[in-house]
Length: 504
Image 1: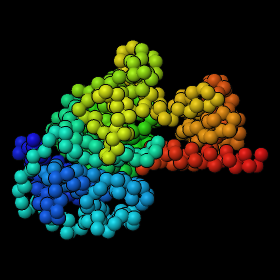
Image 2: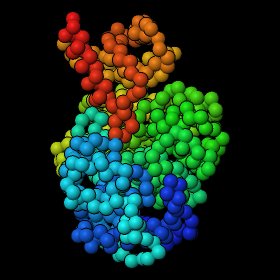
Image 3: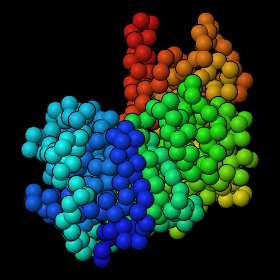
Image 4: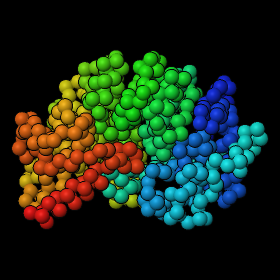
């Protein structure tokens, strides 16, 4: 089977910009993207890369990421984008696990590869040497190898939110079907424009936005690194039809001095995902008649459900219903479907779902019930079939034998007027096993904030759900995918609890 779809796209598409890179002042047509990939495929073959080898790239949003992807598809190699936000030690862990053969990199991030063997660090994408290899003014046609639909096409690592990152495998079938599912659901058209500010090493920005838009012949504008003010400028210039961001990015745009609601006039969808919605941000956008809609996916199962703009008005916290050709269930501990309103684990089936984890057959087996992927997210369905994420199953706090959903406590605390943002985690307690703690960012200094929040929580929560500790912070620590770093917060809570025990 031939999965060289960038060649097909170049054969059928008119000559127009496929990729625009304002930072570098460049743009590339679909025809040029295909030639760049042909040229790079030849070069990689000359370096000894063969079918089934892993090829890595360590770079911010850049056309080179697509060069490596499409060249890998032509070769039958495995494309692997490496998260440049990881620490050198974390990078060493995932690189060793992947078995990558060579790594393209960007100048700015070379210093993060200090613990990687030098023979793996191959070529800087920001140099004339790289540009010469992919130069579309000289074409070296490449005949794509034949691959099977279940061959591994791409490898992405999880964020490690609840433990060590795992390599998520995508087959050619799962990689391509995700684009098909989303295009048919969104009704995208070739005239559409999207700005990619999400990092392209992550499934949300790449599998869920970049790839579907390119499969459909649309135009992608790259923002090399996210910046709220910079994105507002790009919005003003390009007026995109689709906006996909994590909630903190919408917040970053909103607080920038140059935010202008008029920049969203062409946007049919304002999708947020990757972490829990920020209610205050949603309300602010809604006050301008702009409705953020929730999408849901994870590395193992890219965007699987999405709300609609109309439904989001009445159900702003729902993640909507499944996209085309996917199926979801909410299961109890015996793998039976729960009734509407009950909480269970969200399970997903579809051709876009991963077949499993790289070199981890036991982890793979535990993650499926029959052919449904078990997400680890707790959810509920309402009477209309709309889905709501409740919390991560692994993040459930069990205190004195009682279950506490962090999201419930976060939702209550977030309504208090002195709270800017809060994240709830459990910490070790000799008396209760775990106790509830809240990391909080205050809108302004408040002398007796702990007493004020404690009193408020007692009015709205059962006694065992009330935080026993508040940790005031000035900024929220984020993990490598810009989600609140709950492992880091949990360590801070445990350290503080231990210090207080020693002083007692």
